[in-house]
Length: 262
Ligand SMILES: [Zn+2]
Image 1 (cartoon, rainbow, N blue to C red):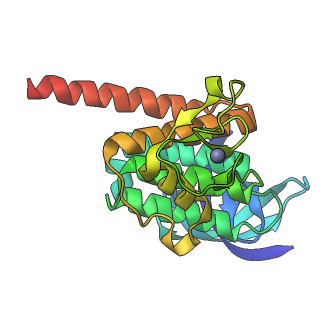
Image 2 (tube, rainbow, N blue to C red):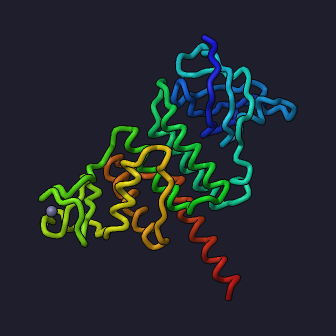
Image 3 (cartoon, helix red, strand yellow):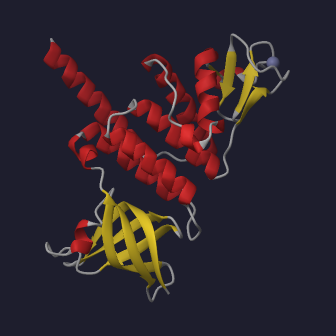
């Protein structure tokens, strides 16, 4: 089988002296692993267009092993070059790659997921939105596509749409107003307030094309991210190394910026 598809490279490993094995999220086959022969040769055009975070037009065929493909041709569509100049954004982009490997379908079309990640990377590289806003949107939308959609339309107890004190229960992915909050829910409850409740709903229910189109103050974005991370933690029972590293780097860079200001 020979197929032309588009794919974002989300992982790169060297194999032997000349070849590499990449993981890509493709439009037609979702997450695949594929060999790039001769990729380590400096003159290889395939090598350059199959680097981490390159979005490329790929011509692939199935290898001997059913699980892996061979990339025969690769031509860059976008390589998000501005992203590569900012360490913090680059760390966040690598977290998106790890998320993609875990949450995007394997062996099935992944156009929707791929579009969300590409839009996120574009906005990040062009500095068009706050990294925390992009992160929360990418996380929640990929979770929804992977079948983990929280129920945020109304309070799970009384059915009210809005309340001054709306709580999110990440463990069960539901909203509860202060009147309905049970003592059992209390230890897991996050008090969101109206703005963050609206934003969290937006990450789940907005049309794909409008996903990243909202504003929230930085403090509220931090709370929104606590909500999305806790929800993912409970649903996936997994921690992402690249997320820990992103947070570590963001902290280091913030502290050094503060030191330079003093
Ligand atoms: Zn209620």
